[in-house]
Amino acid sequence: MAHWVRVASADEIPAGEGKYVEVDGEPIALFHVDGQFYAISDTCTHEEASLSEGELDGEIVECALHGARFNVRTGQVVSLPAVVNVQTYPVRVVGNDVEVEI
Ligand code: FES
Image (cartoon, rainbow, N blue to C red; front, side, top):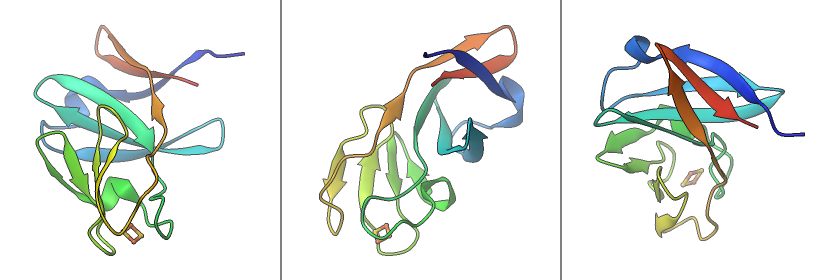
């Protein structure tokens, strides 16, 4: 059953940056874009690199390994070599806590 899990403090992730978190064994990349937080699967759908280590430009993250790009808000792949979207997870901020629903 889905439930909310605290994964970070809002003030520990500066805007324009990401963080790797694990929730119930799921590797998740959490990103801060202009005051909003987004969570996607951390595993690139191309060859399984960690997307939290990628470069964030607006709401687009570029995989550090081969440069595939994904929209962190929608999970949509926006450039090759990946062709499969990444899973997204609902995020909410409660006080200073960032929570992911999984
Ligand atoms: S592993 Fe991410 S683009 Fe290849």
